[in-house]
Image 1: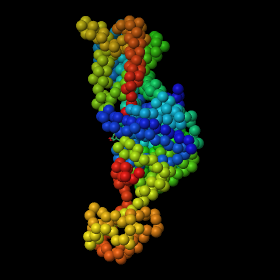
Image 2: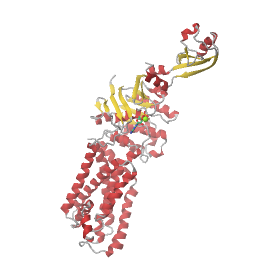
Image 3: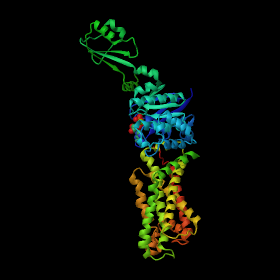
Image 4: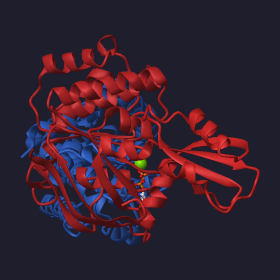
Length: 309
Length: 253
Ligand SMILES: Nc1ncnc2c1ncn2[C@@H]1O[C@H](COP(=O)(O)OP(=O)(O)O)[C@@H](O)[C@H]1O
Ligand SMILES: [Mg+2]
């Protein structure tokens, strides 16, 4: 597959000396859905803004379909649609006018048929002549998406598209993103919900403190995220695990009064109740138990300390 | 050249003007009428003719200039400041448009609105006084140069502003006094000699005087001086805009 976006060694130092991006390199394949996953302040918006021309990187270069975003910015930006994180719209304008404006701004001749079908796809057909201030938050979000698609871009950036969005609209947006992919659009979205990356993405990149910690196929990453731990409090303080439990790869916790069993939640063979009965049959008395799923934060800690590689 | 983008910005800006058409046009009509009631009839009847022109007719070019200058300045500044303030600037910055195209779109719209306002005032005024314009082509030329240069000036203020205070600072504290003191409503011959000299330092005087000359064939300074001044002011605004974009002052962060 061809790389439609190539980010090469990009850094961004804001005038207030905040290093929002630190030597980021990232390649996005044509036609994929890529999720950029990271906590608030990680640099997701700054990275998108550098690609789109809202901020200028301090170092490195970015190419969209081989067009440099600084020296050939017109060609590069023609390929890009951007849905910003905030609901920034001119409230007194009508839905239709704001769409016509966006298309024109991107240098495309008018095409009412296309814009009509775009509105219908986003269930905004009947809102065409409404002023934006009369729309709900979810509708405004869709208007922003329609604006971003008004010039038929080949790459679409969605900056936290489902932050603060209710469950049903989230599902609608996810379906819409999937159908965009089908129509050939490359989608890059940012999110801090693991679930969202899991639902949608082909590949996931994890960003933290301005650095890409890893990019990985979604399936591989989810396997890692799917790791669970069964933590058991036991009564008698033993110094070693009984011989008959060796194959379970049990570990002691911080003290010898807890033991930990790691398993994959998607693995049907690991029945934790069976495990527990095996443990208690071996003579260890279980006082309490809890299960625990690896969180994104833990993955971060793992990645930073290099333990998981 | 992204003509579609220039057109989109221009239409977008004009549609805001037409959306508020009542306010946009009624207010200059009302203010012109009030000026004529106050200055034209009440006070003007006690002022003798200036260079053989009745006071009512004399103030028409000044009134047009005053309104066109403030309108250009405000529209030029607000047009680019508003998207910065509301956050919709993201779309302009991420679109395949050059700074030059952005300027043409916004300044073109601000200038057009101001010309329309000038014409409305002229039409309203002609209901009150008999007007005969000696050099209509020259009049139009000065109108265009004035609104373009002041819209550019406004655009510069809009880029520089990061708050509404800054946005209003130059127009209210610098330009409005200069416009009022620049012979808009009087001939500088009516001033004491010292003030006449001081007024000659006011650039607005040259614009107003030249504009008045195109109406009546007389002005406070010669038409050549006026035209030269207008030309220089326009050139100055264009240079500053080019300098701003060339020396890296960007709307980008
Ligand atoms: N215009 C700016 N000026 C200074 N610092 C900024 C600016 N924009 C973002 N930052 C800083 O850069 C870092 C990354 O921000 P951002 O890209 O918005 O993160 P995210 O989108 O992942 O939440 C943060 O520390 C933020 O405070
Ligand atoms: Mg963000």
